[in-house]
Image 1 (cartoon, rainbow, N blue to C red):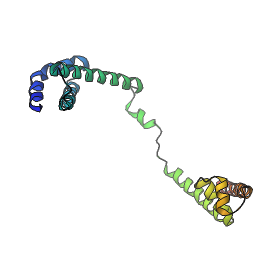
Image 2 (cartoon, helix red, strand yellow):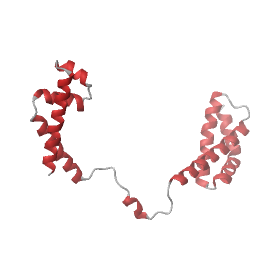
Image 3 (spheres, one colour):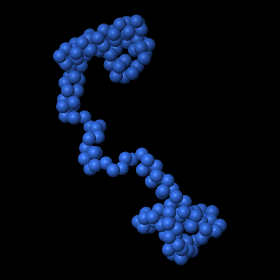
Image 4 (cartoon, rainbow, N blue to C red):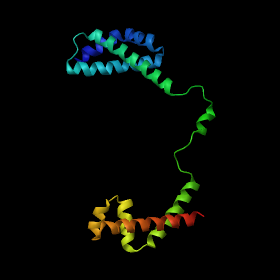
Amino acid sequence: MSAALNALFALHRRSLLWTVMRIVRDPHTAEDLAQETYIRAKRAFDEGTVEHPEGFLHQTARNLALDHLRKAGTRAAVETGGLEETAAETVASRVISIEDAIIERQRFSAFKAALQGLPKRAQAVLILSRIEDWPQHCIAEHLGISERTVFNDLKMAMAHCRDAIARHER
């Protein structure tokens, strides 16, 4: 069946290209879409679902060209055209600047020092609650203390760390 498709495609290639070219008005895109037509036709022929091969080729090429135009229209509606070359340089980057990275590293060091200054149980409560995301009743059960004690330790630890970071930032 592959030889039959190759012969059929070779016979109709020029008319497929013209069909697509009338829609997309770009020879390179028309060529790409004609090749995509062949690939889709090959899949369909391999599955044995094509009753009218010539019509299938032309309809597939036409559908691909229309899909291409639809996508191009959507892209044009979303993208802004006519911007200057330097316009992209003014877009904010998601990369953290070196200065911000240094500030965050120093803030984290202040947090670590504050965490180490807490009693061991309060350290464990803070780590399990805020870093490991454990619920308070699980922390209480794990540490063998009441939920009220977990709440109080967490409140005290959070305030201690917040104050240490605030002192560091002054």
